[in-house]
Length: 337
Image 1 (tube, rainbow, N blue to C red):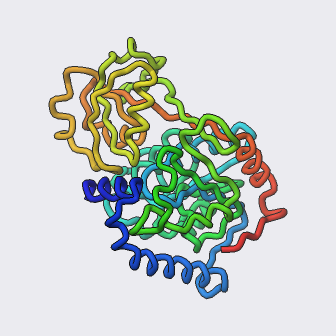
Image 2: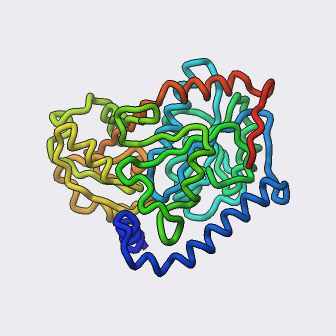
């Protein structure tokens, strides 16, 4: 499956000629997307609204675009203002679809809730609820936590959940491929969707109003929690770089920018790690992403570290989300589906 996905990503970026064969399927897909949105807009499919604002951080392309780091950064900015936020997620990476709401705790098995929801909880302490139906996840949050605003990690196409603000994130290097919808291209929705969202953010851009810059924080020892400033001297210049994320190239590029020469040990996104994955990696330090770390504490060798990713957000986005949380139920924004 990962080889097929890689083949498709390459073809979409190069706009391979054989993709013409998939145009009829793209036409059908676009029709389904249009019909589904029409049903929500006409009230023929249920849209769940809640007494607190909801912000959705999502994308229209497959693969990692850095959404979770943006959600974590928003949580931290809201907390600095004295505002309480909760997070909902579908729970990608869970062994089975989470069909009933699950409130994430420190001891929750990532195989039950997914790696990203557990990472968010451990990193921020914010209440996190996981469910395939995000509206049910929001209801579970509100029943168990006193919060001012809900952030949805992904779910831009989950129109059963009413939202007050939409944030669309894309990878500046890949952009939108050939600009066509699935399966002839990478888009979950047509590019016209960009004009409907409140903020369009570009991962990898360093200038401009929608730029999101990502940096690596301190090194954290996987087993002891010891922290060290990030440097080649602290971990060695040639660590094994373990990553099971949507775009491992970004992680590797960040390490090289910091003067390391990592040896890649790459796995599919949301990979279910086992001890065998670390066989032969005991001779030098292992450096992994924070998302991978939550699944590897009992598996990885002693000299294993992870590096949290910090996202620097546009000030306009932060202020818009803070204002929405402060406004709360006094002046809710009624968005169309």
